[in-house]
Image (cartoon, rainbow, N blue to C red):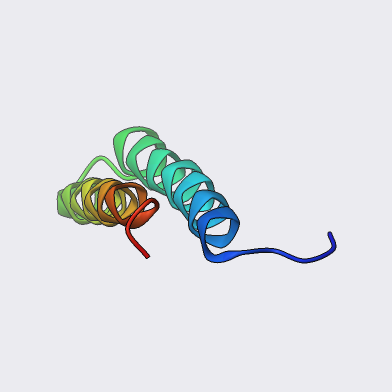
Length: 61
């Protein structure tokens, strides 16, 4: 990958967190129909929030 600066690392981290967040929400919606599904979905939304913060920090660091 060569030399990666902070913006590239934050971009990759944002992308990975969005993918993991989508996976957790889909897992909570399909596989777990009881109360555990709500936990998976809320953790997925938390991943989206952290990815949003990473994206906002991308130009400032």
